[in-house]
Image (cartoon, rainbow, N blue to C red; front, top):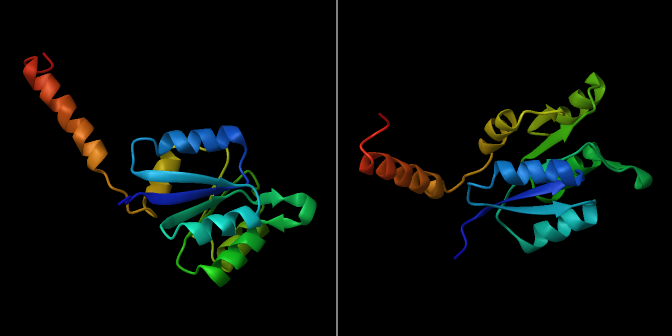
Length: 149
């Protein structure tokens, strides 16, 4: 049985998605990408282990679909899933509106990878056994060689 937690990335560009995937590469996390609300809700209907939705604010400007619309729809259909907005929009009224609508957080781009990891991991119940296993192997390797000195 797969116990991986699921994170859905909505509306980000490929570079941002690649950085986020890299952040979670040592954790038991499955990443899905959605570029509009239809793709997001298809993913949500197929996988009940979604632990976090990380969305840009500007998702589908051609169809006037933004982060606020997404937050409203997720809260109406899947109330328990936190939605974090990761965007370059630094307007007080947008930030306040997202948080009032139910966003769990609002993170500005550009972001530091370690900062983003610290912020996002608090929403995900990850299996850290892989990380512990790597640390144990490293410690064993160091001990076999007589330590660092």
